[in-house]
Length: 209
Image 1 (spheres, helix red, strand yellow):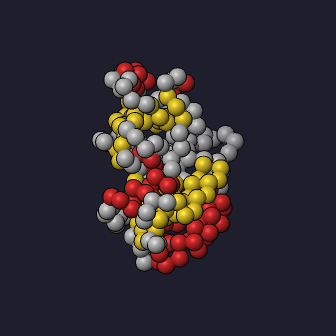
Image 2: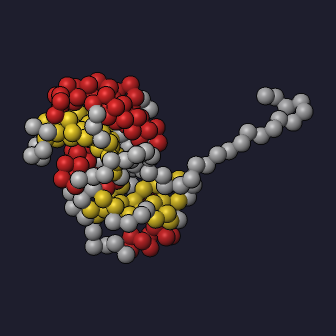
Image 3: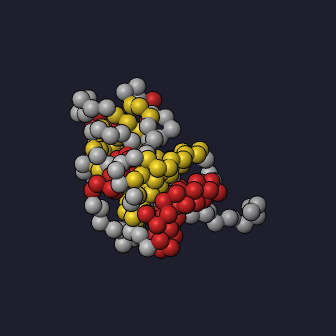
């Protein structure tokens, strides 16, 4: 039976799943790692690929936002498998795979900013919006009728109405089975803000370096 491989490493909890074309889960593994997804991914990935065999028809990767390193590792691993197996790779936002229904999702974008979006059926309903604290609180006031989730380790600003959830590789794979996704030519992590680059200060005469 044909199957799809789902991979998500956007949070400290890595998740890998193989889902058959009837929607049943053939394989599922998760692990927790703050900094070494690359060292923990390949054992479960090898098990998933062995189980899938020549029935693997595509790969769906969670693109974040979240851990930049984790998302880059999962994309690289997916392309490596795709090249060896001759199957397409698709990308979906990790934060769109937190729940099966419709919900609002927020997260800490750092440097005093927060992101917010609406999600449903493994898709974002519109682009992420970037807000300051006041803007986030106002946005949440406009979305009191839906559940609010975050994939951060804790609710931003300790907001009591926000529940912590983790992206599901099973949801990613199931959506890949039923949605007829278009293969991605070049996947990139879902960026919330432009990279913030600091330059080293030039030492003055006599300063220690």
